[in-house]
Length: 365
Image (cartoon, rainbow, N blue to C red; front, side):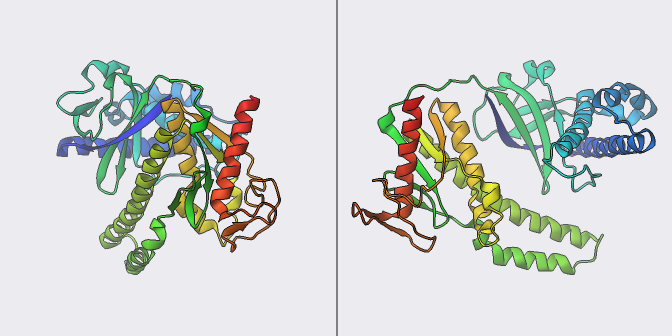
């Protein structure tokens, strides 16, 4: 399985200039490749493939000697980005590819690092071809020999290295079903567990809305193209980044605690994109980041050899543990069953039903 570690890097002034130049040249190549595809299709009705553009890269570098200062595989990855953009468009995952300005092209990638593996880590540095040894702030341990890809990204006046690591897959081990837990995602509670535990939604975006609105008003008053507007834009982006980092930290900690404390984790197979189309709930759903939380739980289960199960969410909030249907709308927070007399938090009851369905699915398999 693959895991990405993100570390801040501290390049020297000379190295930073090389990295800025690499970003600029990669962006120009991206826009040139995109223009070539558009013009060729308009003129001939035929598409230009990645192979054609990759084969023409050596001749392009001869005509433009400055591109020799960029590693050849970094340039090839730029062409792959253009190709992926078209694939995503044709498969309905994204809009038609657009040209990139310097604010929308902020990273470059070394797809292979086998060549520099022996000298990968030295005195707290990572090696970037054509740039040199760059100091990295490694806040956690990792195995340099397992790194096979490096992505360098510029975000709000800081540089980061995303190291993609290939880890051995431990595989799913048959867990103790008694140490299983059902998880019900909600808005009042971020999640409720079948053992009665509830965790409130932190609402990081809602808490920062006033500050964010103030910064955005300041940005709107700045003259377009001015240095002050660029500074104000960075402050807005930094505020968004802080919210995203707070949310990501919360999700990682809660998913880690959930996975390490249980052998079997059962969650609903929610169609979150469809649910977010409700204009009354969309903002709260996105702020809670249900989709990201499910992904974190799923990959951590795989990493630690735990069992992860998704079940049909139909009627989990409208049924009692005894099987009797109990209809209620979102404003009703307590579950009261007229048949068995159970009175409990509706989210906890839903979590118990989710766990029950997950265990049946496991035993049936």
